[in-house]
Image 1: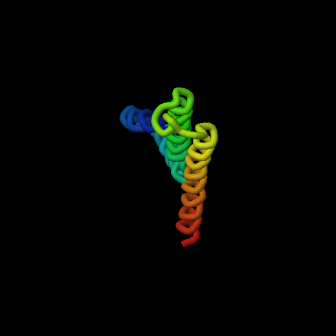
Image 2: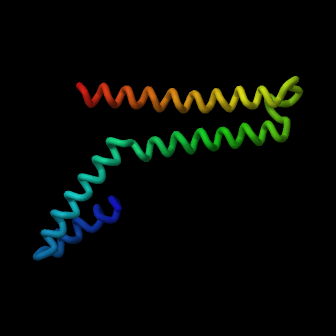
Image 3: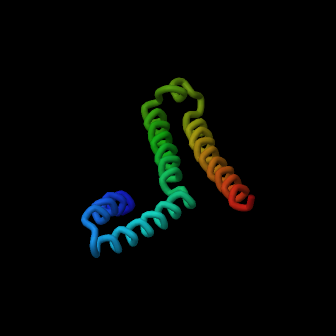
Length: 108
């Protein structure tokens, strides 16, 4: 939506007339949406979650095939759970630290 409205704005300005009002409205909407996206970090959070998800999938495939660190492991099930929990914990810690940083930044 932000991309489409951003593209429409200069066209509305170029056409002129009544479309100048449209340009003002689309500019305001783009500014509001961009601020919301920046404040809540939707894209950054999604990228982090997808990265963790894909890493966990890869780890599961290694576990299933008894490859990588699972090859010759005495207790592959426990090793898998420990490694998966470590990845999830790392993602949670990163999220908490990001939230604390953002709160400090907003309070300053």
